[in-house]
Length: 394
Image 1 (cartoon, rainbow, N blue to C red):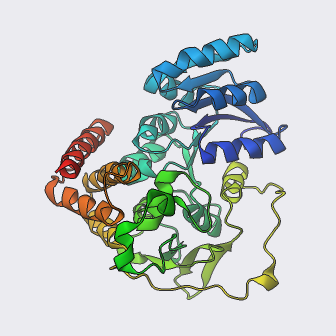
Image 2 (cartoon, rainbow, N blue to C red; image 1 turned 180 degrees about the horizontal axis):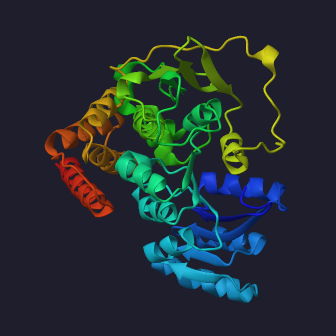
């Protein structure tokens, strides 16, 4: 903690992670001050959040929503300044008075503001998967160059982070650690006969058995693309080769990851499947913060299952490993192609099984280039999106 009072910008405050973060801050008003909140287009919820937390700034990335928010805040007599677009996001991510940035914007949109926060040496609580999937090497370099602290919020990576010594710094290989195991719930279709998967609906794919999440991430969980992304993230966060990161199915979602030490010891973090727990751990790090969430009842943990993954059922997981070996812009293409394919599935333009088919085809076709700047990352992202849209239309 820089002071007893943490000053925060929350990027993506209307999403599920953003809302959980604010709920948690509400329980500890004496410890946190919200300086800025941002949303894409949900100005009504953002207005309510502004009324409650009175931030200095509010940012919207959809132009039509700006006027609505300004009018509402004016009527309420709030002097929150409304900013707009990517420029507004970057501004609030790098404000001098802010020491901590919760990066919880879903998708590629979160890339630039999160990067900007690292460039300004902030403590970044990273809940945006795409940042590390698309630009892992650039992100880690930027954090190290500017002595920024990067803390993963994703439950699996946060679990690993909690198991490592407090001297550990993200992007370095943790001492004495041989390998990592990420757990996966298996999503809603773990036991669905493969031939039935073709007719799965967006509603069924969005119904996650353990976690409450947004639609996109729920579909990624059903295809295991989500876990593929997490393998890529773990590679960058903990400097582990892909061959030292494994995934197992753990339907109960109690153990969030395992850390295998070189001496044969295995460390794990167990908790309720509730994002408030990793968010709380990230906000309080390196300390701990009291939680109203009931702790696990140990005597009820009598059946925890850990099963190998059927790679035939989840072909996107193998693709993620292949892409990670290729490095360069390959993960950028994977993320973009998947985002477009999932969008098409949710819009009922693509069947569930064809998400994987389209993503595989896009990866085969797209060039793999090396990248040293965010501009190159965004160019590769755009190319992959365009190509994937064409494939779907065909």
